[in-house]
Figure (cartoon, one colour):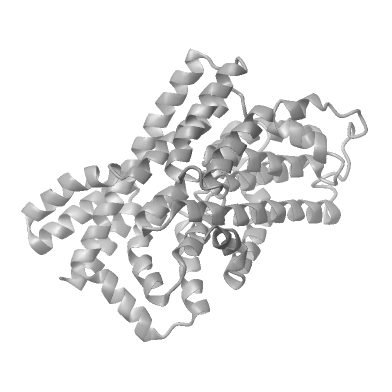
Amino acid sequence: MSVEAGFYGILALTILLILRVPVAMALIAVSFAGITAMIGAGPALGVLSNTPYSFVASWTMSAVPMFLLMGFIAFHTGLTGGLFEAAKVVLRRLPGGLAISSIFACSGFAAVSGSSLACAAAMGRIAIPEMVKAGYRPSIAAGCIAAGGTIGALIPPSILMIIYGVFAETSVTQVFVGGIGIGVLTALGYCLTILVICWLRPDLIPARISDEDAPPDWSAVFQVLPITVLVVLVFGGLFGGIITATEAGAVGALGTIILATLTGRMSWHALSRSLIETVTSTGSLFIIGVGAAMFTRFLGISGLSGFISSFVANADLSYAGLLLVIVLIYLILGTFMEPFGAMLITLPIFLPILRAEGISLVWFGVLVVKLLEIGMITPPVGMNVFVIKNVAGKYVTITQVFAGVIPFILMDLVIIFLVIALPGLVMFLPNLMK
C-alpha cells in the first residue's frame, strides 16, 4: 500500500478536472496510472478490463436505462405536458399561484423522470412564458423553474439515488423512500419562498393574475390521469413491497409505452427518439460509473481510504463538525462539477468514514443528492440555469437566472440544516418499511 500514491492520485485528478478533462476519462486515467505505479501494468490492465463488466452487470444498474426510458417516453409523447395546466387550475388563486403551480408540476414530472435537467427543460418551456405574461419578473420566473427542476432528482425515481445505492451497497428502495420526504420538504420550502417574495416584493411576483376569476378549465386535470395511473402503478407496487426498485423501472417503462399507445400519443418518432436518448444517457452515466469504480479500487489499494478514516477518528470531530465539513465539500464541488462526477469521486473517501461513525447510509444518500442538486443552480456552472437560459433565452439572461435562484438557494440551506438536525425527516418513511 502507498498512501502517498493515493494523495498524488487525488491531486492529479483535481488538476485534470480543472483542465476540463471529462470526468470519466480523468478517473480512468488516474486509476490506471496509480495502480500501474503501485503494483504493475499487468494488474492495472486486469482492473481496466474487468471493471466495466463487473459494474454494468450489476442487476440493480438495469433500473437506470428503464427509468430513463420511462421519463423520455413520457416527455416525448406529451404525457407530462398537462401537469402545469392541471396544477394551475387548483392553485392559481393563491398568491404567486402560477409559480407555486410550476413547483407542483415539477414535482409531478419528477415522479416519472428522475432527471433535474429534463424537469427544468420541460417546465421551463411551458411555465416561464406564461409567468412573464402574467407580470412575473423574468428573473424570478426563471429562477423558480431552475430550482424546481432540482426536485427531479429527489423524488423517485432518481438516477442519482440508484447509482448511490449501488456504490454504497445499501437498499435503493430505502433511499427512494427517504427521498420522498426531502422532495416534499423541498417543494413546500420553495412554495413558502414564493409566498414570502410575493408578500415582501409584489413587484417581482404579482399577488393576483388578471384571469384568475375566470372559470377554471377542469378538463386540464383529467389530462394528467394517465401519468397519475403510471405513478400509482410504479410506486404503489414499489412501496407496497410487490416489486423491487429494479423491477419498478421495467414496469414503469412498459406502463408508459402502453399508456402512450392507448391514449394515441405514441409514434415511431417519439419511440425512436426516446430509445436513442436513453442509450446515449445510459452510456454517459455508465462510463463515469466505471471510472469511479476503478478509482475506488485504486484508493483501496493505496490504503488512503483507511488512512483518512483513521485520521477522522483520531481527530475526534463531532457529528456536527464532520457533517459540516462534508456539506462544505459538496457545496464547493457543486459550483464547478456535475452531480454524478462529484458524487462518485467523493464516495470512495466518505463511505468508510460514515461506516466507522455509524451514520446511516440511507440518510446520507438522501442528503448527498440534495447537496448535489443545490450545485445544479449555483454559479458558475449551475447546469439547470444554463438549461433554462437555452429554453427561455428570449426572456432572461444567464445573470438574471442566477439572480432569480438566490432565494431558493437560501431555502435549500435551511432544508439542509433541518435534515441534519432532524434526521427523522428523511428516515421516518424508510423506518416504517422495516
